[in-house]
Length: 225
Image (cartoon, rainbow, N blue to C red; front, side, top):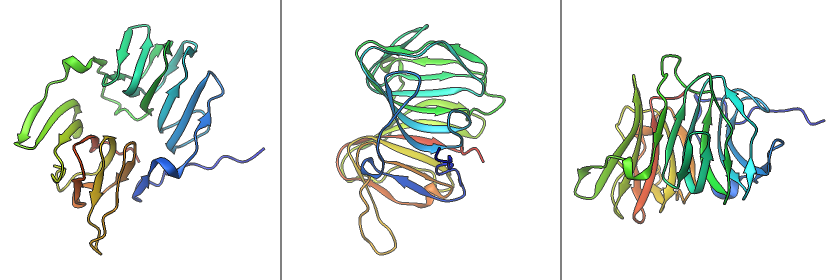
């Protein structure tokens, strides 16, 4: 048996995962594929991953001891509380239980066991319930969730626009649509294409620009060490 090694759990270190960097892994419980971005333990602990439910995939009812956060990237995700199409955002706090499934299949961004102990809010946001606000003529934002210093916004921006990340922010980003370029010290553009994920304690000190019209998920002030 191959010994398990924690994946990208040294959160004081910056890490970037692009779509070609890893292979999908089959989950043991259901017809589901997972693409881990960070993982503390084999089937427990803190986890951030992309999860693909194949058509008809179904999990038995189970408990989330420290919460689950989901953004639906494609298809329709379902559980006991309803059906959630692409663009839906769900938060299930510590101690919540559900039996998730997908009739047609779906792709999810999932974070497990990373809720603040005082964050007990349950959220079920459909795409039409998101509130968008213009932060400039070429960028708009929808704040999905906020608790204490933690914020989870969606940013939508035009081509050529610098991503509006607060300079003091730590956290992570996931490119949902489009692509970003970053200016490093040498001036070379480092592309972040769709489903690229980046985590950095100094995220706000990096400069990202949209190479095309883009949609980005940000998790700010939420790194769990």
